Image (cartoon, rainbow, N blue to C red; front, side):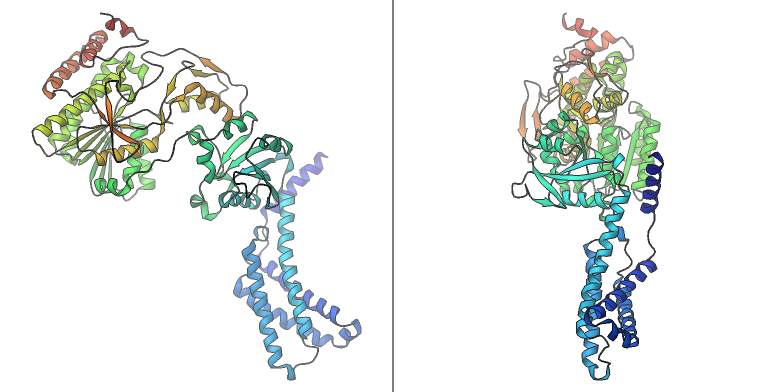
Length: 638
């Protein structure tokens, strides 16, 4: 049995890797023509008559074959790979045969008085035409079926349902059937549309998306459900994911039809559905023309350009045809990766990748002096809460002093706009990182108000504030994924902790939109949707992975961490903008001269590296900063 199965595998591999040369397909088609004509004579006349006029019948067969040979060549009926034959190939055969037999019929009518009565009578011509088409079409179908049967490995296959029975779903089904090394056996479609339920498509039944779905999946031993790209949005807002994951069903999807390679789908393009794909959010649209009008032909600087947000801003800005990109970051290797990405995808774009620390004022001034950016996206910052609790001086020197340095240089060198990336952790901060970003907001906003009062028509300062982004460097999603791959446990700090989430491209699109709509001094907040319970996120990621042996472990809140993040201070209100996902926070205004003096004092203290003293100065600037799960809580009790 083992030898037979091994031979079967080798035979299947041989069959799947071989393609008949075009001349052999052409010879087979001509042989079918000859057999059809001769068979038609056999149906029309007896054997004695055929023997008597064998020379005339031979000339008839040769004539039909030569005429068809010409039109086979003209319509390229033999150029396709037989196992991938489609309706288009059958139509080519039909047209070629119709034209060739039609011309033969016309020829016989015109020269009937000169031709032998046995030379292609109309009855023979018609019957051979029908037989030729039937045999040539059937030969393609037979080869296709034989290939599917011989190449299909039942031992390494799995049964598949496709969710979505319209164009995108049907195209996925077709692609699975022509894929050379296909391991998926289509057993049915799942549809939400009542008019499709119960019907058959591509030889399989269409099942309803209701309470009977679980039974139907079990009866047909379905292991994988491939979700049509047209159904992904509906999937996010339904309970179907949880129902399927509870049955240990693997979920996969395919790219939209517009992204298929060569208008076909390769098996390698199918991918497992990730937690990011299931974020229950509606697609975010921005005013592309307005954003483009602000960025096209401009010198655009991005600080923190090698980070998750900065690099995605770079990708989106690159599509708006800027005059020049100035990409600044202190991380050498990630910035080198950005340089390689630019060479691969935007070779013609004028871009400078500069290694620099934003808290190095001399270095930053030399960059501004040389490149004079017109539009600045300031994404550079230290962002990890526990790290900044332990490195307070660095959070001040980079986040606060670095931001002040870049903002002051933006004014000095006449930048048109300065867009600062902030965080929801700046609202009622409970940690050093969040407070440092709030101080940045205060400085930038007070500077903007000062310039407006003085009537200076120069730099417009805009702040954007949003929550966690899925998949960013060091975020919870990559960490959970890594823990799951290593068998767990997945560590969650608290069973009740919740966070707002947004994808990196979404966040960056809103940053660009807010930058284009801002007039200076605004703090824009983004609609982050519904908050997500982190433990639920972990459970769903474990289910998506297919692992059943991974446990969740609660480790306790980290230093400075709170159970939930806020996008607004309780004393703050919001004003709507023309974009439903972007609002303006009305916050307390600060006097620039006072803010400048107090921030300078904070920066000076940061170089003493006395953490308690530094945090006390931070709390003096931001009274709502109340530490949690931190050694700095003692300062709040005084």
